[in-house]
Length: 161
Image (cartoon, rainbow, N blue to C red; front, side, top):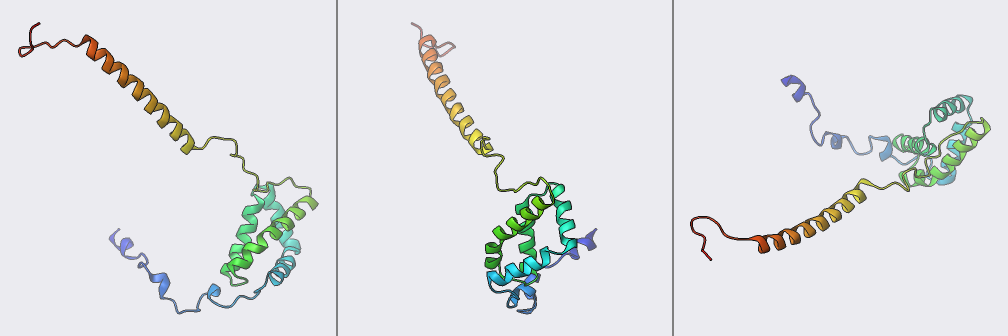
């Protein structure tokens, strides 16, 4: 077990590679949005890609997740930069939805927020704290009033009336 602890990477080890050794540290293959769109159009029109995409959409994976994964992997491969990838995501989503529509698949876009009308845990906690404060104030005031009315000292050192 002690050997496993010493076999872990050293903190900062990822920063020791030579500058430019990683694909994302090189100039991108497709520096403009137009070139990146052409790259995606060419790769998305293959029969193999369409079959895999249809399978993934049928599993219920949202379109936004697929598009973000595609652009992130392309950034890591050095195909384009992060900013170009973010500009291409809406087009990727449209292409994926178009392919899903042409295959007659019902898919989840991932754009709508299913929790829009639900109360968040933070809101519930806030309301619970406000309610508890109100209860504490009421109980404290009533208890003080009851104690002052009914309070008669007892014991050895109590004064007699």
